[in-house]
Amino acid sequence: MMSGSPILERLYDEHADAVFGFLLHLSGSEADARDLLQDVFLKLVRKPGLLGSVHHIRAFLLRMAHHAFVDSIRRRQTRERSALALGEASCWFAHQHPPGMEQDWGPEVSRAMTQIPAEQRAVLHLKLWQERTFAEIGQILGISTHTAASRYRYALNKMEALLRPHYEQRHD
Image (tube, rainbow, N blue to C red):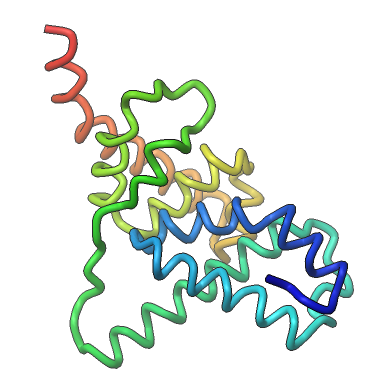
C-alpha cells in the first residue's frame, strides 16, 4: 500500500489492522472503513511531517481515523441532508473479539454494536479492542476522561440490555 517510504510501510503493517477495526466499528461498513483507512495513510504520505513529534503512534493514528470518520459524516450529512444510516457490521467482526469474549457471540455482539450511538461505539471499541485507558480514549477522541468513562458505561449498559435476551435464550 505505502510505496516509497519504508517508515510509512512499517507503520501501515503495524497499525492498519487496528485502525481498520476501529473505523469498521465506527462506520458499520467495510467499504467505508477501507476508504477512511486509505484517507488516513494518504494524509501521512502527503504530510510526512505530521509524525514529527508523535510519541504514541497508534493513539495518533486512531485520532486521525476518528477525525476522518467525523469528516466523512459531515460530508455525507451535507450531501444527503439526512441522518447517517449505519449498516450491518461485516462478518469480519465475528472473528475479532475483545479479550475473554466467547467466539460464538460474535453475530449478536455485531448486531448490538450497530444499535448503539457512534460516540459510545467508538469508546467501547477503543477500550475493549485497543485496550486504551479512559485518558487515552479522551485524547484520541478529543473528549474529557470523564466523558469517555461515561460513554463506556452507557455503551456497556446498552450492550447488556441488547444481549440479555440472547443470553437468557441460550441458558433456558
